Image (cartoon, rainbow, N blue to C red; front, side):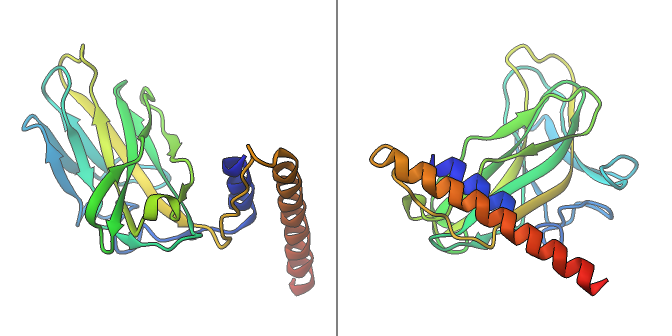
Length: 217
């Protein structure tokens, strides 16, 4: 239930795009700042001709076979505070191999200390661009102090021959709302009421915003 409530707040609050500037998440002019880590048969490069929505993307390639680590690390690190809710997403395109994004959570500032890898989310989009999003990350969970992310090409055990992932429009969003924690197991009625009130508040904010836009026009 807490996750449902967080999602309502996420849809209600406008996100702030923090990736795409300094961390170069749109790849329109190159992949400066991104680094490759993994199997020696893997590589990272810039693909100038293909991207979404604009030409230019990050290419991860694997020329080997079987399971392997093929990863591109973001140069971006964000210090976070309890009550903040963060979401990362990216556009992916592949030749059938799984392409994923994974958040990296740290208990120290500036991406230092113990690292906890959030379960990656990916897609095997055969030559079509698809959006892949991570579930909301509550910065208050387990005392998180900073987060970053990486992009993954995940070959299967039966992988034979070259595989390619293209990534574009990599974003890290922070909502403008705090996470409201409701212990659903202890008070299911209260959790449902809070969810209803949050949804109603979102509707009011959207209507008010729409009226303001019409008046200003």
